[in-house]
Image (cartoon, rainbow, N blue to C red; front, side, top):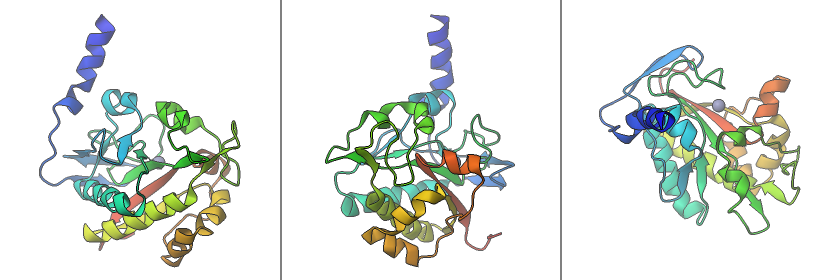
Length: 233
Ligand SMILES: [Zn+2]
């Protein structure tokens, strides 16, 4: 009973949160804060947040208001470019920014993790998308095949379309993509699809060399950092 009450209290910020005004990202993704963060919706027409624990208990579904507008516009575009695909957002930033449990960055509302879209034949309604925080532990091989079921593969074409939509939307909201972290062994697969070829022409900053640990953990999701146009490093 006490636990239920405590969990309920932890969820209050999200239950009563109202997005209004403009956010402020202070400092960097490694050492920063978020003021007046906007909370992404838990459910949208073609997107979901991936974990109730992350969303309601850890309070990690917040971003800068311009990042919010970018993500929402990109999903709206994807309703047309990727019909029938349900996207999932993974961890963003905690309500007030700062240090988070499993991330070195994500501190100021400009970092977002996106779950890799997957498919098993025609089936996209896969259990591996519904395991919450454990999704971060999934392993995919160098061809994007799921380690525990090789018929489950990353849908690189959909991923490319989503990143293109994010890049377009960012520009409409005063932002640009600062960098993308995706396991470097998967870059070839991503850039070889039809939309991946178009994506490659955009010369977005996919970090080409990552240390072993960082590389290993970016196979189940792609991490995107945004920055404000005019404030590039
Ligand atoms: Zn990340």
